[in-house]
Image (cartoon, rainbow, N blue to C red):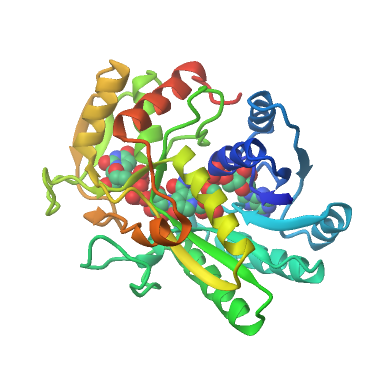
Length: 337
Ligand code: NAD
Ligand code: WQD
């Protein structure tokens, strides 16, 4: 089967493209490279014996999408393309709603016109917003996301749920990722943020590589083990595997379903620093700062639904996440450039 992977040159998309090729799927990647490099795809091909088709372009370009569907017999779409910087979304909400929400609607219209009704969508644990219940399970209400990025995921989930309810031909997986980290064990592909990183692991990596001086730890007064924020970090290769399982599931079913993809285990910022230092042998200087706006104390998945229904669970632990992150950074100190 041929899979269209939007955003396939990006961090999670490139790891999933590799997993798809390794599993014997044909892959067409559509990416406008606004936050990625074509080199990631060259590296993906280097890691397999297969080749992929790359189309440089935008999901908002309906004519281009129609051409892609006309040229290739696409069986399903994995939709990673989107903007993901929370802070930027607060400053430029329209750009986020246009790209993430309107772009997804255009993609779905083009899919329907081409009679392709199988879709795996990159959602996020951010759709749960702030809640007292932990771990987070799929039946919890969504919609209280505190920033336009998060709201764009809530909106797309809503649009896709309505679409599935209106037309039984659709089969849609909403995959709610927790905190993706790590890299392929080869060190050839990994996360390559533009400019100063917002997320914890890319920031720590750049401190270790000597590109940034010290880490700011945002808040040590949360009701957690050591007062710092707790998150459910998930290895990106486990995440990629979850996409293959979801694809398998929607091949034989109809409707819309959401699955959490996390490990169920939470680590604090200080525990992450310690684990990274151990894996890399580098000291990570840090300083305590007040809480970051919009942050929550803890975010951890109940992924039992994915285990039950997809037969998926994470297999890579914290040490492997840290070692793989560090190998990628060490081998590619300037990312793909
Ligand atoms: P990424 O930025 O590395 O990848 C996104 C890719 O989409 C990039 O290659 C970018 O060039 C491309 N893209 C963006 N807008 C596009 C458009 N209009 N047309 C074509 N291509 C476009 O991000 P990622 O971390 O790989 O995230 C992939 C998806 O997973 C995103 O939808 C993101 O919101 C979601 N997600 C990410 C995380 C995370 O922490 N990384 C967590 C939860 C959900
Ligand atoms: C993790 C922990 C910070 C940076 C974000 C998005 C979410 C999802 C994943 C896409 C928190 C602390 C961080 C730093 C720090 N993305 N931290 N110093 O905020 O859980 O989730 O990425 O869907 O929507 O919000 O991830 O990596 O930014 O933070 O102390 O320089 O590390 O306060 O406790 P977060 P993160």
